[in-house]
Amino acid sequence: MEYDGHKITMLGIYHGLIVDGERVTLHRYVWEKANGKIPLKMVIHHVDGDRFNNRLENLELMTYFNHKRIHAGWLRDEGGWTHKPCPNCGLKPLSEFYKQGGGYQSKCKPCNLVHNAKYAEKHKEQIKKNKLRYWHRAKLGKPLTEHQLLVLEEVKTDKIVYRFGRYSINGLALRENTVKLLLERGEITEENIKRYEWVSTP
Ligand SMILES: [Zn+2]
Ligand SMILES: [Zn+2]
Image 1: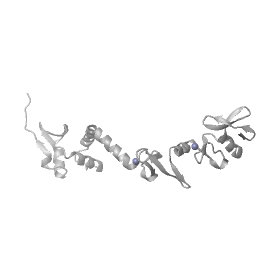
Image 2 (image 1 turned 30 degrees about the vertical axis):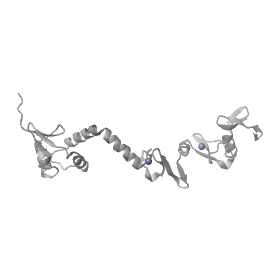
Image 3 (image 1 turned 180 degrees about the vertical axis):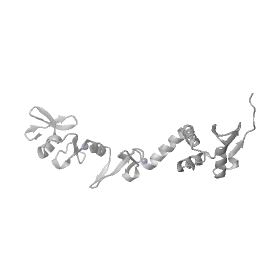
Image 4 (image 1 turned 45 degrees about the vertical axis):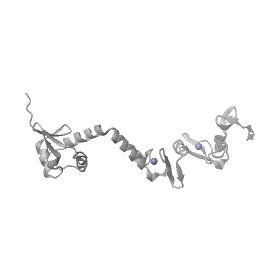
């Protein structure tokens, strides 16, 4: 086989030519012959997926970035990208993925939630500790923020322990007036409070 008077050989996984003593892949040669030099950081993609179909209409100039997406299974139409694969459950529309830093998260929304839930389950204790610490720092007497209320919602099933004149949740000390405030606000009930007997220390 010949192209343009040059013998076609294999060049890696592609067909190639030797032109003026230099090896070039056939698809790059065909595209450049019609359009001029391929710009830096751009690649030539075989539209039908057949890397031996080097007819000009099967060759598309695209960025390295977009080429990676194409071969990762992303789909597009005239308006741009429309679908991408989720590693867990396959091809899905882009609206099914959370955005992240100009792109999209790898897993789709449902798979992502499952992943996060598993993470939360695994690191339950540490997450709880962080939340308690954060909540505990909230200024007494100031209205609680929405986030603090959410955190409180998560921890208020735990008993508030009254010990040695102090209250605590999971070992974190709370001042008595904090507890009073929470009672007043109806955030906790007396039932949440477990009073320990005073134990004198030597
Ligand atoms: Zn390609
Ligand atoms: Zn998924």
